[in-house]
Image (cartoon, rainbow over all chains, first blue to last red; front, side, top):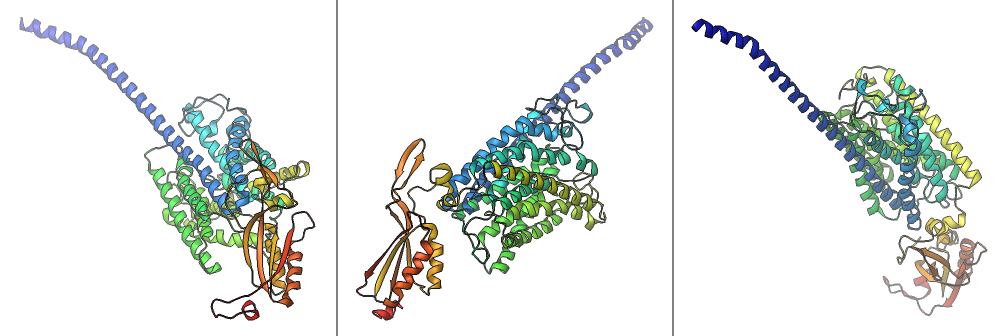
Length: 470
Length: 113
């Protein structure tokens, strides 16, 4: 009896248990799979949330630019500057959607995107990443967020480049000439150099680095602005007959200060957001601290420089200093240590102040300091990677910069990229401004300039009922 | 003693100040003014509605001078403010009964100079 019992138990054990086990195994496997899928969904959701919040912060920078630029110009041109700043993001949104995004991130050759060119309509299985990705925007397959998150994030950057131009050409540009220029800049020129660097083009292949756009966004905006400023000429009254520059005071420094703080705040989307994923959060934190440290150091050095050269610390220089540090750290923020960020900031603030004096002497009239902030420090920030980069400091293999034993290789590539973007953008912008100048004219009449562009271009005033001595 | 009052285009103020400075006239009072003359004003639009603005922005200068400075001051203002177009402005010259420097109590020509 006992034997039979034991035997039957054994048989049951041998035959049945594995069956049960298998059933349990497959249960566990399917449970695990569904949990992993849920985690994956949450990860995509978190990354998307971060990218979108960062993009909204960068959008908020439109406010900062509008305040800084209008405050630094005269009361009689306020409506015009605000109108320019408002419409420029609308123009950018439409032209980047129509063709800009495809040209920048579509698969193509080393110089421009060719697939999925129009209306962000290319094949795409985002948020799949790396090898799992199949579609035409493979330059962005490193980030696991939906296609429109990628598009929106890139759009707000493209808008920023056009806004930079607005400030430098202020107080004398024709409204419609600026609108046409902004549309072509965001639709064609910005995406082409952007493709070289962020779209898998020739500079990306060479190992050129620009984390959040010192070159891609800021110096591109700066070069486009410089071409415009040269063709426009200085505002009337900027230079006395013997050629010495005269100050043309901004009319609202409270506005400029608020705008400066808004831009500083927005930069926490611009730089930390360029991670385009959350990961363990360490890169975001690192970039936030390098960004803020550079801004702080740059404010201090701009203040001291202004104190030395102008006898008293000029508020507009202090604010330009903040922006200069932010622009300079935009390219290297993920590739350098916090200490290096402080040094980059100190140099940037000094450069900003010196550059303002230098442009004035060269008769390059830039009412808001856009060239000193975005062009000069966009170039400096890009080159700073070649000097201060520490290989893999946040996981990216950049190689070391000159000051960390990496020799001149990285600096050389950075300089090459900076130069190539300079030549392309300056030449392209110059030709475009020139065509506009010949066909429709880019500068308002002297009479209109003296009365103010608010009345001339828009037929209305910003401060109706106020008495303004100018 | 004369009081010279000039109404000029606001954007010519810098040129007028420079011309006065060159003529060694260093003292003046400047204020904003609204006024209308031959220019007849302009129209502004606000949210689709057109409004006639016939009081234009002008800048008003007041300069008290001794007799021998009257002509140089007038010439300097004209030199700085003239464009040849309607709206350049006007200069009024009137007798000044008395002038007192508050700090010292000086009166007359001394107080002006």
